[in-house]
Length: 319
Image (tube, rainbow, N blue to C red; front, side, top):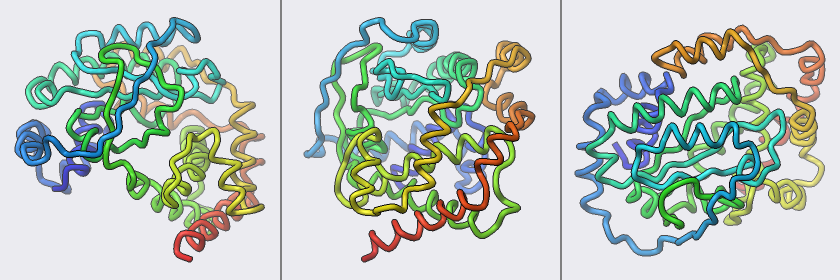
């Protein structure tokens, strides 16, 4: 197992994302062994040069305090650095926004206190999923040595980010190839859905996930070409390379702007009672059906545009 694969497995497990069980089956490694495996791996990478220091401002208490403050409280028992990213960090959140955050765990905490991290992230999951019933990821839990050696997130991911607790800065290294794990699976998905209408998402969760993946493509594409730019700036820069092949992204962006946030009392009540918030969310939200207007916008033309965009990006990267 490579270090980045161990991180992906540990991140899913610590957050309680149900798909961690697939990693357990494919690797044959029990989650309780991840800390010890990580200890052996990091012994050989300490002191790796080239990490980039990012100094981030502290959160000023503005924006959606009713979400951010309980989220901070949920993770207050941990000793690392908690960073809030995205639209909640810069007070531009819309009905579409989810909660993007990264927790930089000291190595000794990641190795020896995983139960404490698990309990904190379970509390945080209830805040996250109560805010956005359709969120598809948890808190990015990144041990400090992994962040310095091969960060799964590039510096642009922390554009306008703020510190909620811990140190005022983070160190990132080896992020130049962080796009590889995400870009090609999304391109494959775009092409597959264009060719196979029966596989297209029907639930509101599946639709929102795909729209989010579509809107992430420009920044991943540019990173693959050696340009690390914030997501908000990536659309116009990608258009300089791809021309008019961004129709699918343009529609996804318009849908994001008019998206209405779900607030389901039964879902929130279940979150409070469930010992495993993410298991509950994955089981419950399949019942959230997309409005007819949403489905009508995501017609054959949209998926064909998405497939064409994927092929154009492949051509640009291979050519």
